[in-house]
Image 1 (tube, helix red, strand yellow):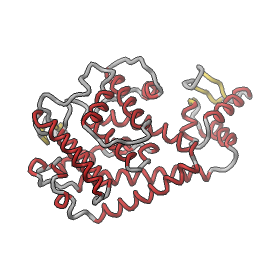
Image 2: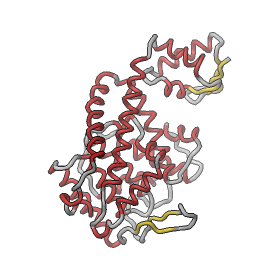
Image 3: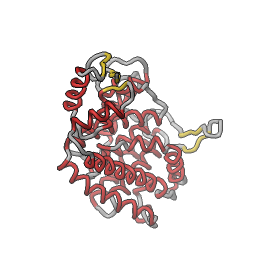
Image 4: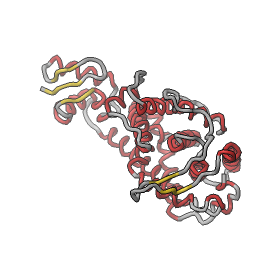
Length: 347
């Protein structure tokens, strides 16, 4: 909430670098709309790849890790879980899928935030869907010992602060006096400073980021995993948050380190998205020939069908199944198992 009390003060002195990043992202946003009309099959495959990567990475940032094969099985809908990590993984799957299914975006509200939190912990014994009842702290073990780096507001203030944050954020969006990505960055900064729930604040913040990006028309969050990029740069992620949350309680904080970091991530995501689309468009030969070439000359000696799908965005699963069956009949490859999870060995 602190970032939205005096917008002129908060958003004064925008860094020059940030203006360049915002322009780059908005250019990518415009091109993305063209791709959606021209390459729907390719974008569908990129979306599925990004979905699994996002679920995996957002949990990994919080130390919740799952074996890669199990991760894919759970992402594809498995409902039996072996441990708490798998249950939390499934919760992020459900929350992500709920966001991706939306065809309209209502203003953010406390009930909606708690709905997402309830989905996150629906498969665990954790208390999802409620605000914190005890004081929580943001700590670091970077120096080999426990160090409190930020103290969020106490539980008694949480409900008011979160509600006020969301109302002020929606008002700022309607005023349209500040770039929407700057507002999203400030929203997430304040949300993480309030730390409104007992567990899952980071994952919940990343889900809200996805929701607001999609609501503002930045569909790259569907096709490239923003969470994966955050995971790969998590030291910078934590450092920028720390820099921007200093003096937050006194409303003397500097939002720009965090907002600039977030926009670097989004700019990188758009660059990757455009490169993948360009690579798919440049591929020559029929789609069946491209599958043959990959399986016979480029794939590992043992691979799965999903490996081929990821390597060849723009080639439909039906085409890949057809070529695999032909190569099997020709004696070039041999299956182990059946269905999507089968492993193939190149002979």
